[in-house]
Length: 88
Image (cartoon, rainbow, N blue to C red):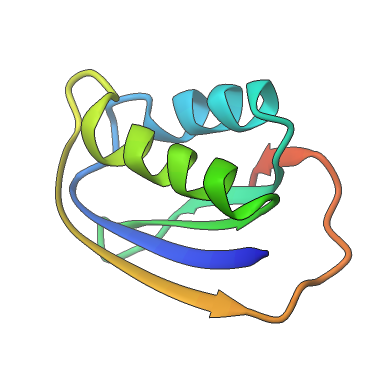
C-alpha cells in the first residue's frame, strides 16, 4: 500500500522529518518526507497497511515538540520506491 500524507500544524523546525525517517526505517517502510513552503510536511509512505498507519499515528502523536492539527491522507498507486529518505 502507498499513502501520500500531509501533516499540518507545528511540524517544521521540530525534527519532524528526521524522526519520521528514523521511525520509517525501523518499520522497514519505503518512501520520503519533505517540508513544504506552506509550513506543512508531506510524506509518501509505502509498506504493509498496518505499518503505514503505525507511522502516521506516530507522526500525529509521538514526535516531541510537534503539534499536528490536521492530516490529509490519499491512497495512491504504488511506485517503485526505495529506502526512506528526506527530500529537500
